[in-house]
Amino acid sequence: MTDYKTIKGFSIQSVATDPKVTGVAGGTWASGGNLNTGRRALAGAGTQTAGLAFGGLITATSALSEEYNGSSWSVGNVLNLARHNIAGCGTQTAALAFGGEVPPGGFQNESEEYNGTSWTEGNNLNSARQALAGCGTQTLGLAFGGNLNPSSVSALTEKYDGTSWTEVGDLNTARKTLAGFGIQTAGNAVGGASDAAVNESFNGTSWTEVGDLNTGRDYLAASGITTAGLVFGGNVNAQTESWDGTSFTERADLAAGRYGGAGGGSQTAAFYAGGSNPGTANHQSTEEWTTATITDAIVNEGDVYFNTATNLIRLSKKIFGTGAWASGGALNAGRGNIGAAGTQTAALGFGGDNSVATEIYNGSSWTEVNNLNVGRRQGGNDGVQTSAIFCGGYRDTPAGNADFVESWDGTNWTEVANLNTNRSASGSAGVSNVSIIVYGGDTPAPATTANTEVWNGSSWTEVNNLNTSRIQPAGFGTVTAALGFGGGPPAVAINESWNGTSWTEVGDLNTARFGISGAGVQTSGLAISGSSPGPTNYKAITEAWDGSSWTEVADLATTRARTGGTGVSTLAIAFGGAPDEGPNVVTEEWTVPDSLSNISVDVD
Image (cartoon, rainbow, N blue to C red; front, side, top):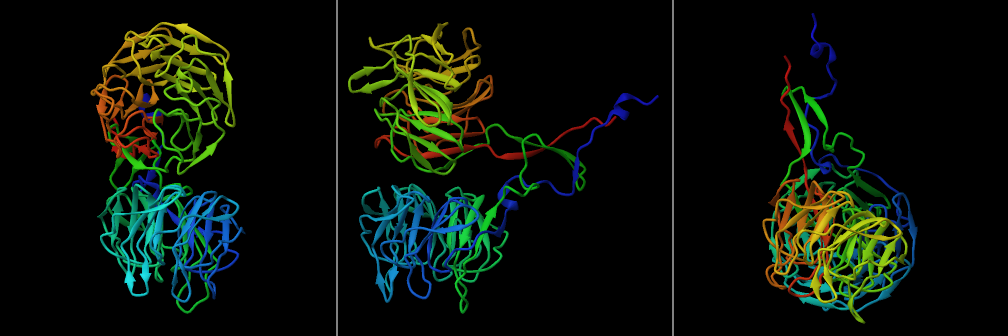
């Protein structure tokens, strides 16, 4: 008799080689829309679907500015000063242009800001130069390298704060016609004349030489962040190389080798527009780098397949404890005690340090949107980018705790029913502006509270209290399955689980602290940053929760407390916070990579 196992069977895909674990390995270049005017030695900013190209050289120096929507370029308002060998950074609606040359030999210190419609002159660079590079945002820009005069190659670096430029630590290797990628506090300077392969990393203060390019070149372009960059073009070169924070790897070539084009975007979605080859006309063409359409390049968690070369059945999965933090786009306004909601690629940051500011994050940059009605800090907060809530908190004018609540609908904040217990520094968890749980905090006495309340979209209901009263706990989850951990004073490691009815103490944090932020669900999440035992003893610690216990994993790059944190255990984001030097704008992104493992199969 044939047994059931034999006739039942199952079907999985057979492959000759393992699918690639990272999408960038399978990325390719494809044709995009042409610039309206071909030119070289121009600068770029923005993303692949919202790009900007400005300045450059046609037969004479150009002031042209063009915007890209992912398929075609449209002509916008011109720069105030025409120039080529210019540098830039930022986004399509908030860009920065600086330096450049007006022939013959007129090196410039001019700096201009773009608001999505027109260019406005700002304060100048301290040192006029051309053929420099830059990275960062309009309000947190970085300029480095270039020519100070025809015979002097520069290592100078300057930081922009939205108003003025300040000189900081020099490059280790003076270079011109180089490229840059990253942000002001975590950027890279790569390549340059004469065919340099040098790569240097900036930490906000000084440069460190790191892994070189495989192919040295100048007049190249770049995109991405300091842990995930892309470098392309240069000289008559078509080569593309990806940077993983440690080394460069050669990837698929451009269709046309060229130099002096405008680049922008990320490691997984970039553009390269314009440029030239010696003795040929300027390019109008745009090429787009993408990994999204390469179906065999990205391993999705849970995929099972049979490798015919090794005779192994394999599973793609996330491995607990393998995540790392990487730099993201900076907030427009630095603050601690900031509220957070959403995901790593669609986040919402609001309030903090008595601010009314609200910003949304698209996975690469923050944009200011409509403000809160009342500025405050340390309120209960959660939800998604289009549906969030901010409960209670502390305001400076008039000073004291607040019981009022504001609801976010994706466009505006609206005041709704007050909390039953007036408080600040509470913990919270929830999924939208109609479903949140708030617990613990500081009541007006002042005194810590264990009080817990649940919001159903119209009213607040008091439910069973925490077992341990405390201020500044953190949490994540839903109104029926939440986690509340940490807090003080003094700093505690206590962790409690909510089942929709009552709180139960479960596995404690490894490091007691308060002012933590959290990301995840009740069975899988992260405890990020914090402070213990004093208010200035800030932590970069990250701990991961597996449903029963906490494990210390990779630290944040920036030590701080009272950050905004949101997302899930494999894709989270932390932003803002209060480090020793004051509220900051730093954003970091947490990612757990895909990995492959073998599966044992009973074939009897």
